[in-house]
Image 1 (cartoon, helix red, strand yellow):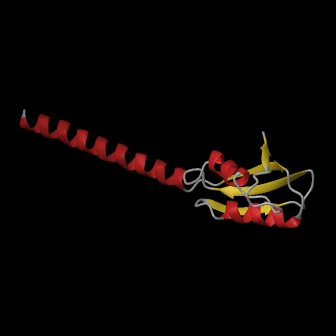
Image 2 (tube, rainbow, N blue to C red):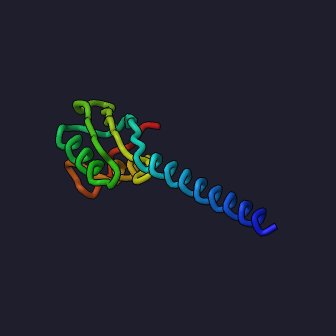
Image 3 (spheres, one colour):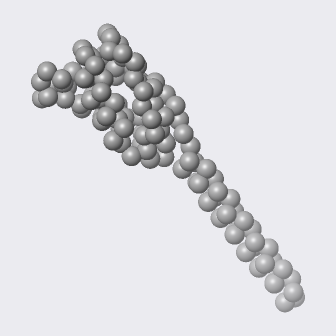
Length: 113
């Protein structure tokens, strides 16, 4: 009887530790995930706008890389980021909360959805 209890307890403990190890492995993989996406931004009028927005995006923890097209009616920003550290919503907020080139109190940039 005592041996049966020991076997059940040992099986239980092995199962718990194995599941715990799998969960940690899964979380570690999720933390290292890199997502690539493109944000299209309206309201950009000059190269300084592009540099300022890109700089604000790159300041966000979790953003790995930000490349921008030349300024135009709609300018694309290609990003690589870790979604476990920064959300797309936070990136959009960083873009849309960037002050305008001509008037820093304006918020002229809008992300096209």
